[in-house]
Image 1: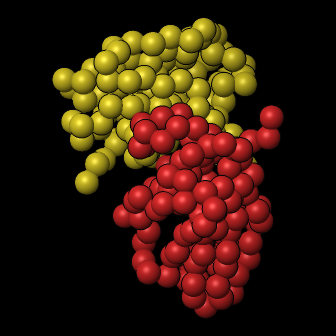
Image 2: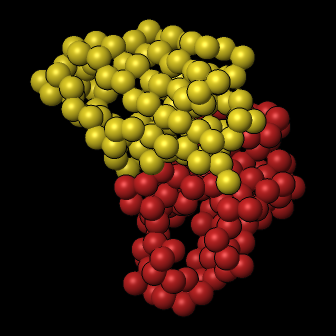
Length: 106
Length: 116
């Protein structure tokens, strides 16, 4: 079945630096790739998404890139802030990665 | 406006008991999804409704799990004869349009089920 792999599982960056999270997927028919942020005790919240007809999308400090040929997509957060600390999940449709715990060091 | 709500937020059940978890989606949302999230893991798809029709239940782990959405709004996930491996957070999400699984989903806060 469909599988999504996500790396790294934990990431610690200095406040103000950039963070990058990478995912690969197995089903070449996948066409919708959302990214979610989950804070403790809350459900996942969509932060950005990309569809297969687009290679890159940006929303303020957050950007996502998609390489359909290689079946991988990435989340980029620039100028990180303490409130960016959370667990981030990528997904291919309804299939989620295993998550990245992002910590921002002051 | 109101988001997706789930109740109860926490549920403790003795092994062998039946439980029912409720999801109230955003008003007017056509699609509704249930996921199971084990500690430290990503959500795993359980089942999907479009209005009252259950279009995909391939993720339900066993026949002890049953979901319904009889009037196309509120949904209930029922687990019969609970076992310890059922302990997890159960998430509900809704989506405005009905074009399958490729659209923005809004998640509720989840129900944390602990089976003792």
